[in-house]
Amino acid sequence: MLEDLSGKLESTLRKLRGYGKLTEKNISDALKDIRRALLEADVNYKVAKDFIQHVQEKSLGSEVINSVTPGQLIVKIVNDELIKLLGTSTTQMKSAGIPPSIIMVTGLQGSGKTTFSAKLALFLQKHGRKPMLAALDVYRPAAIQQLRILGENLHIPVYDEGVGDPLKIGMNAVADARKKMCDTVILDTAGRLHIDEQMMRELVDIKNRVRPHEILFVADGMTGQDAVNTAQEFADKLDFDGVVLSKMDGDSRGGAALSIRAVTGKPIKFLGIGEKPDAIEQFHPDRMASRILGMGDVVSLVEKAQDTFDQEKAEKLEQRLRRNEFTLEDFQDQLQQIKKMGSLESILSMIPGVGSQLKNAKVDTKAFSRTEAIINSMTLQERQKPNILNGSRRKRIANGSGTRVQDVNQLIKQYEQMKKMIKQMKGKSLKGMRNMPFNMA
Image 1 (cartoon, rainbow, N blue to C red):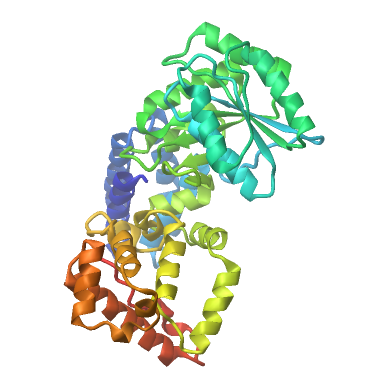
Image 2 (cartoon, rainbow, N blue to C red):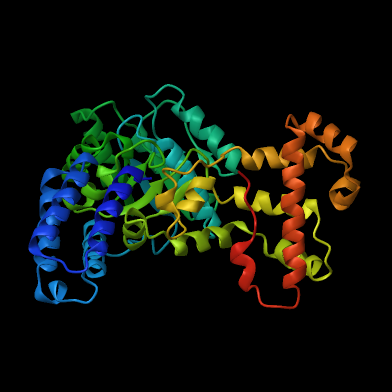
């Protein structure tokens, strides 16, 4: 996410931190590089200009020039201005005093509305809500079927009437949600390839009659300034409450994320970061600014871990570790827990100082799958007692998993290193955990 922009900003700020003393000249040169990086990332020209102006005004103050660590102060100034640009604080969604809360999802065709609607339903379900999806897109071929399949896979009810008037379908969906005791209705509305009056009139009618508590506009993060311009038109005619940036995991320059709030005045509320149903993040301006500047996002990483890891399994693993009974089955279980947190790149990018190195590092994205295949090719006895893995057994496992004997040997070596370290740490502090040899590449 925003790798190119992040890399260029980090490189420029690293130069500033390297200067023993800052002058107006080297500050000005650095700001030109930052401005160029923003424009290349497709940030709105006026937004980039205003951002640089604000940073320049604060950077040229005497407290910065005369500071002992002027480079660090400018990094803080850039970080603070990024947070302001992105929205200052996290904006929560509105909810109804008397259920159900009605959320209306809008946007152009192909922006990812239907997929986001399902992701949002799952997100709310994980947070204790009982959502219902409603199919109001009666125009796009297979749109209703797509929502049905998504709802079925996630075990979330979907209300649809097939063809019909989207306004009536929306009103009937709200009534049905009340009967089924669902506290949230997510309306997946129709889009077009471009804005037209008929579509906007339909959306305005739904807004006026169904009275949603929250209207979200889904913008394709890969379309750059086009997404910003479309968002502005929707804001003018529909006055939505918040923005969702979809496809932020793709090869996007990221300008929409930095421009859309400044141009529309509407807060960003969610990010779509992948194709999986749980690939959605609530938007936090301070965390995003930290990621852009290569400072990681430890808070989000911890939250992901808390949402993913099974407390009961963790307690059982702790007991096994105390008894020195760590097996390859435990090793595999930990891999599966990590996989649930998302891609390896997304996890590493949240660790301070690591994200900036990813661009030049070779991350083996198939490492987890290869490791799981090797362990799955073992018998139960072999997983529980890896010491019986002689040469012939390892050759059989390699053939069964489609890997090489060297891969099997490497996995066993990693397991033995981990087991040895766990034994050394037994009864001591976990200070050494940070150096755990878990190199899967």
